[in-house]
Length: 332
Image (cartoon, rainbow, N blue to C red):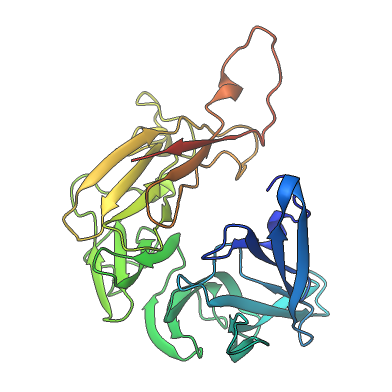
């Protein structure tokens, strides 16, 4: 992956059945890359969306679990001084197959330049999170693949991930900590992790014990695409936790700087997998945050950490970059 002629902004996505095939976008084109021997690769054009200047999956999406569809936002040029492009349409694109060799673009949702934060797709649904939707504030909403609104899930846009629970229900997990206190979906589940059953419209609070999660821990969430009884959470504190400091954000809280997994059945069971030991350094950098990620069947968990090396003296007195981080693997 390191030597491939693509970058993170191309949002590469693995094919669901062939590990040697990747899909990625460049500008307004969707392309397919086939990996060959000894680091070689070839890529071909799938479709050019001429109606847009560029396309994106917002950096937090993937191919649908059945391997057939991708969610995109189409961007157009703008005359605004602060931005050259703005989000205009959200749509589902069906990848080409034998029955449909050209692929197919589905109906569009015109978001009128709203601040789209995330777009995630399951086999039957699309979850969109907006920092600001049509000047009406933050919200997370559920749509079908034809972009018909099904459910206003909440007036928030926190960290979350779509997946399947052990009963094969398509679900969406999210933190409830930054939700408005009067939001009906969250009143019974403050500072916790919520599970939305997308087909049935139910909401389950996954952690109801005392102590509860604290939003200053900035939870990241990852869910397996295949049926799983677990959802995975990483936490990180904004400064080094220290019981002796008076700043509330720096005092040690339960689950601080940990990699956890939580049962998705609402039983409240939590398993602690690891302490990631990552620490903030210098300017508020995204690099040091652990950002837990799980593979499709939930058998492997990744997280990253700078392991606090900025705070440790070394014999060579080497300077460690603010962006330094390593990746670690946990097999639960």
